[in-house]
Length: 209
Picture: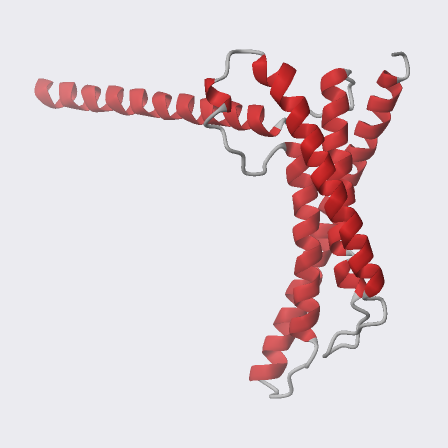
């Protein structure tokens, strides 16, 4: 299919761009939330005139930050995964048979959450928050927006597995976790060997003395 490669490249390029955008938004929203909380602490315990809306706004910002962080984690394969079965599969079985099913199931589930989230946000467009009178559509939009971005992440991963492109990500959730485990185990073995060698050298030096 000649159209699959440019589609895979475009989707993955867009997914990479949105990860950068989410990273920047996390920095901005994190700074904003920190400033709001610090001002709330100062006005409440120093001036004794707290803002009635600061905790509410900080809570809404945290919801958006969680969605942005989940998008980045999906792209980098950093979400928690159950590796018990994957570790015991023959080489190549997961990539050929299990991964496509997992990816398509994940896309379907995220798309369902996005659709239900859009409906909830639309129904809440006239509802306002109790402290700040902010239309509740804005905090509720975090779920459908975040889920839609995650769909793009998983779709890019799925297309990249079928048709690799330079813009694709190799951070598959299960396989990247296995690589991390192997790396951690190798580092632990190396540290243990170095520690054993240092102990033996110290013991030998003490005996010679």
